[in-house]
Image (cartoon, rainbow, N blue to C red; front, side, top):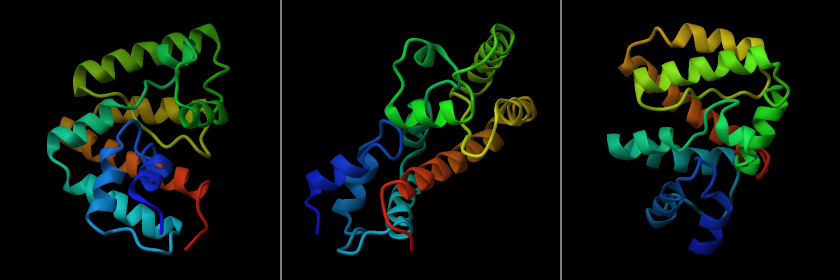
Length: 165
């Protein structure tokens, strides 16, 4: 069985910049000897869902804007960099980048957290379409949608780290 430090070191970034989720999952005994994608994901999601609304908002706010200033400055986490590049967000035209920047600003102003979507398997057009649709949601709808996307991102990240079921 992994020690607490080993577990947090390995899985503390699955929820972007939110190691408290892995810490609590370990401390609460959710993690056993046999680690697989489903078991670790279930444990981490349980902690995320049990977190206070402020903590959950903090997790959402820890995510970078898509094709935003952190990406332009090369300051994304390695996971975020790979995910955004896989969707082609590192190869936007000036016009496309301007549209992402405009949508990012409007979204954050309306909801108070960045637009979050699991980009694996999507391209820039899919992402823009989702962006333009979701910006019309209520804050409550979008909070739940963003939280679900964070959970999906966590699952996809775990798939690269652990064996399946």
